[in-house]
Image (cartoon, rainbow, N blue to C red; front, side, top):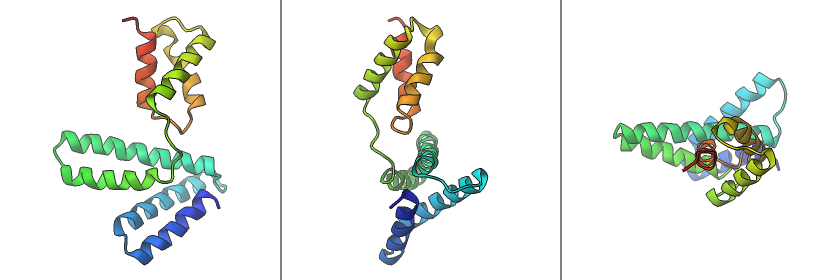
Length: 149
């Protein structure tokens, strides 16, 4: 069963169980996936669906950050609940140690020396961690490795 079918089945289950928050989030995700299908003109495979889900998760994280700064705990809690639902459909994210190991590999492979090679290293790391790591964490780790202490 593909990810899109899983979302449909989970949406039906959430309806039956009266899980309003989960149902609402899944409907939003299905809408975003449908929009991406219309944009591309073809059915999305699981990798493309994961990209849509990652984008949705990133939006939730950004909104949570803004609500936290603004002192809006009520809206923060809503975004946090939606993010939790989205994360159930995403593959396991790499930990910082795993990302740091990939960063070290890419730096040695590319022969990166300093901050001037930041883009080259980021490109290599993001290609390897596609969908499995938060870009902000990758960016922080790459910057830390390339910037002399």
